[in-house]
Length: 326
Image (cartoon, rainbow, N blue to C red; front, side, top):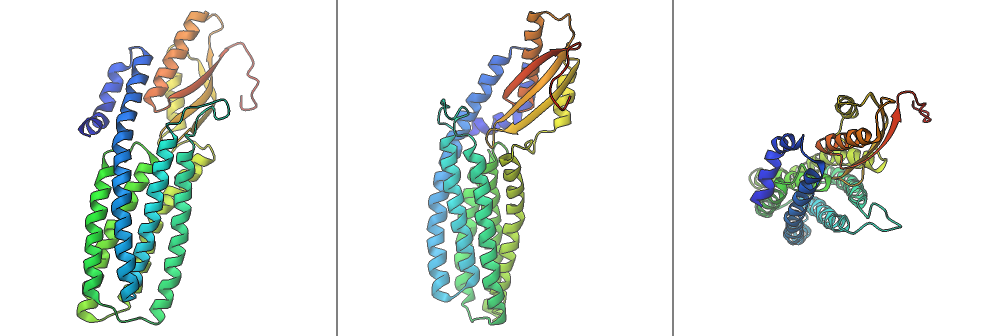
């Protein structure tokens, strides 16, 4: 566990120390790190699913028994999170399936589709919570505040512990990040429910319950909107959020021997791996050995920019590019 965390912090200096070495070692090094992360993340998902599902059962049972909408809506929200954690775990397993003749990239894209599905499910649950809350605002019901506070306090503990399991790897994968954000927002929501429970207990203002469920819906909406936007972009083969097209272009254009870099396409193979195709222009007198060296340097530079799969076409400066973009 410690290893993967430290590696994340030191990655930048390591990258630069490799900059003039051979590209193969660098790529292999990255792959090893990804395997270590997967073990850690895999365990985090399994623990998270078990803990959160147990809490959903407690919350749903108590919420149903005492007629608390805020507890039931939070149970629904947590159940959606359990489903999303489960789907993310399945997607993570599918990324390790080997590519074949029918699926030449393997099943890496499932991570993107799962992130998109998770966001859609959460949006539906927000609608259901909001609808029920409006009804409850019109006709509030008496509730035991202390019970709500006690159940929500368990939620703070479970969600915080589970979120911390994902903290180290949250910036390496969209699904891990979404799991971390969901669980953290769940902990914040539970904290709100504890406060609400005490307010209900001491003041008997029962409308606090549906108001809290509306607040829960808004909290989920905030984190879900970003997840929906990012996963939709990746589903449509858009440029991943952490990659800047102009930055990639300027880095490659500065490499010795490259006169121009155009007809660039960048997309996500999964929530962690990115691919690129592009044309580089070289001097018409460049020999084949030098062209191979230039391509090698370009691919190596792209690895530093988190693009591991690059297909580069070479043109000489006196040739005519056939593509419409040229």
